[in-house]
Image 1 (cartoon, rainbow, N blue to C red):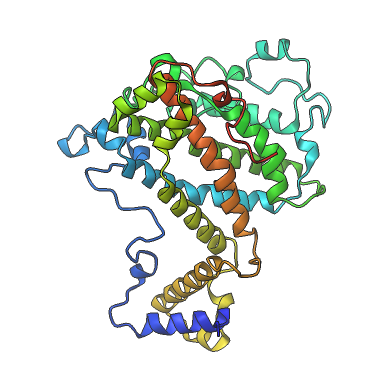
Image 2 (image 1 turned 180 degrees about the horizontal axis):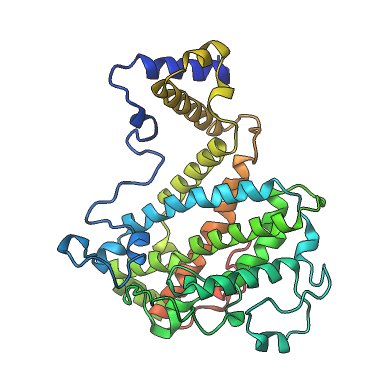
Length: 386
């Protein structure tokens, strides 16, 4: 017979507290099973490397090789850390209704040109902006001024609306120039067009209830956080593709020369890693989307958790119980801020496929050929979201 949730947490908590070797740090770092791997000198975080400026220390220990930055371990560590950002952002958006009016062209009338945006873009545009477009363009204009889009890991949704560059008063950031290949513009590909389309048409209805709650400003602000996090995640596919190309340049070059996009997709696919991503995303969504800790404990056990060690043990017990429930194939739908199965679906049918489309497009350009038309930035090569 399966234990109830409270009974399971109680058993786990007793086990944690009765172990003489247990320490608070172990609660969230047991072999680092569900968190990012600690990077060594051979697996430097890509995000850390991209944060370097011209004022970086010149000591030998602070020097980072491109081969280290582009290691798959380094990239995967960065992608794992991004999962929390994405899941928390989706949970935040899910609290609001769909509020379709914020996505409608001219839903709030003529909003005009966002402050600081390139006016030439709007001279040729006949459609009025949606509320989301207006806010997103304005946000990107502001972020452009403070150098966001000088980073090779950031991509604007409306690059044609941005000013010519960052504010003159800010110093120029010195990013590594050899992370991605410039051949045929491979380093500059941008799939935000299809990302934005699928977000509005498929993802929002998947995570939010129908209707309008008049929280239009809060809705759009949360939309922007989700979109920017998703954009950063899927475009990391370029770094993944470059790493895989460097490990087998002849193999990818031959497939591209033959025009074999399916072969490129097959060569870059790692099904075992994808399965782990889906499993981890579901566990995190189940854990982050529910009321934690003391509210899940039997009253007697809750009363016993007076110290820091006991409290952290309770956190660990609750997290483990939630994870175990989320992995039960025949379990009832978990009640929480968002269904973990939805997060798993978003990764399986949207984030991972779009990331791999970007990888294929990058590799074709990297090898000197235009990618097939079904890998264009305005579509998904395999679209199950219609």
